[in-house]
Amino acid sequence: MELAKEFEAASRSFDRAFPGGGITAHYLIGGRPVRVRTAGPLLAEEIDLPLRHLRSSADVPPMLTIDLWSEDETGVPALLGDLDPLDNPYGQFTMSDDRRFLGHQRANGALWYDRPASRIVGSTHGLARRALDERARPFHRLLAVWLWDAGIQFVHAGLVAREDASTGGLQGVLFVGKGGSGKTTSSIACFQGGLTYLGDDFIGLEQTGDSFAGHGLYGSCLVNVDHIKRFPALHAVSLKPHNDHEDKAVVYMAPIADARLAASVPIAAIVLPKIVDRPDTVFRPATRGQALLTMAPSSIMSLPMMVDGAMDRLAALVETVPAFWLELGRDVGQIPGTVNGLFDSLESGR
Image: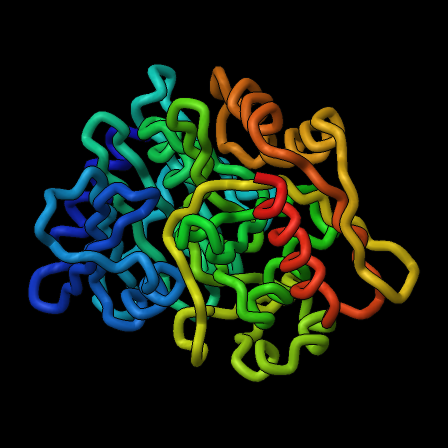
């Protein structure tokens, strides 16, 4: 079946599922109004948890509508579409020849996106088998396409912020690198150390003139089930994976007492975490070339489809803000203090 027909079939099924038990929520994602309608209160709660810090009023018409239903909660069968069998647990991404319709099929459900209509519609069999990335970053692959069309680029990075003493506003530092480099460790250590959290793995990058903003898209993190024991407060509220192939736990930040979350901050620096075998954590300058080579491969590969200009935006970022190595020693408790020291150096250098 063509993607357009699958989208229409999913739309009709959603219309059957939504009346009577639907929940509508509004968010500002990347600063843009998004309406999420969910048929099934348990699914609605799980979708809301990583987006809760982005809640907004319904005063502004949505620029994107996302419609979802749960088969277990509504009795309306989930649709998987007419796609080839899945070869990996992260699903199969497809696109129509004219790039209007996109689909993302998972073992437990599927999503379709009509770009001109700015509407995503999809379903899941239920919560019991939802994958970790679906729970921590709902609809992130299709959301990345919508954000790109809105001028915001998905970047594989963490982002934390601190108030600037001279301006009173928040300033952010971007943690970049391939998986296992220490982005998540740095982000959640800073969160626990009192800094403001915007993400540990994916953020939105937007250029306005000569400056760059980082958008926090998900108030959640995914941490290896063994590694999270180094953060007892997060370990206590972490949720285990549902599937045997998954080795991470999901943590939702918004319900944590005294959590500091933000939707968007100016980016003041790029930080390249690097795990080293020594006691102390320190930072030192990095070159622009090192920053681009560290950031670009995983960020470009994380985009669900090839787009023109993605590398140019990253290159412009590294030309605009300074870059630093963050050499992570064995004591993760030193990370927040070292990052605060980096913020101090940025303020004194202005």
